[in-house]
Length: 442
Image 1: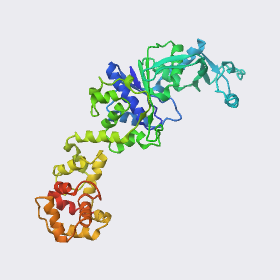
Image 2: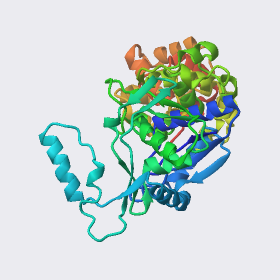
Image 3: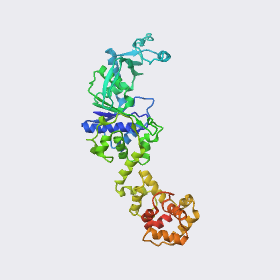
Image 4: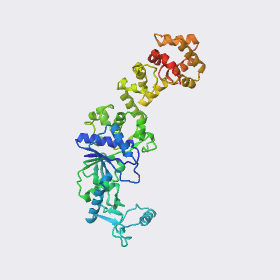
């Protein structure tokens, strides 16, 4: 069994999504169940309805799962097992005050040593109390495990002191996670969890859980400045990527091949989940940090869009007054703009600009007199021309215009944009609908 275990404390970022996709693919590859576990144990940081946002995104990315679990539902089991460990002498109550521990941390800082908790401190401030709000697990034991991506990883006994597993009757992340991962055969997550893994292994050992589990910690993702991607990077947000018009499949495909050249060699860049399962193995992912390339993601998105039927984009014209014309009448225009668009959002902007009001187009044009002259002749002379060259020569001769005085206002009149596609291609896509374009008003 494999799992994706997000916390409802913020928006999903591409690192989360990458882990979700990899767990999903490996579950399919290994013919095992894939579950979603909402890790809502951080009661102070949980955000209302953020779990719904997460589930909606998983649905958008077609990451189906076999079961949905909320970690807080397991609180009674977590408490029961914590007290079981106390009875067995594997865990203990800690009566240390915050002030005492802070003084010990300060001592370590002055001595330039790493702070390590000592078990003999546990009852120094006990007094007549019989229990404490803090429960710690006896640790101080070396841990070694194999990471499927990074190889052998080890922690010495001195690096792991007795750590907190329950605080105010609420399990810590590591304790809850260890218990709820009992049935997991493969744990795939970000490398920021490497320091949690030895603690979780010790908890599982104390509880008598099986040790037959594989670990894979995904390398960090770097931005253009070779720094770890963070919330400051807009492209780190899955919601932001979708808001830019990127297709979920394009986002997923890029994350799958990022740092995994073997999949790209075997499947290319355009594939669905089913066709990539045989080639995908999380163990083949590079152990080096992955460099996020937004332009590459856009290119995949563009190639994916071009494989779709043009009819699938007709809905982008729904908000535009076509004055009785049919969406299919603009098939050539959509095809033309699709070749220039990296995303649906860009395609929609091109279409909306084309059908922008004459007043708005004139406002953005620096050659307003020439704009008015061209508009005037197009309104009075509805002649159809066999070619763009005939059309251009007719305007040039009739108005005595040439160069930028002709082409700049003409481009804006036809497309609502000062730059872009060649005017001859625009004309050929619009020549039968010229009157609709030039008579679009506010």
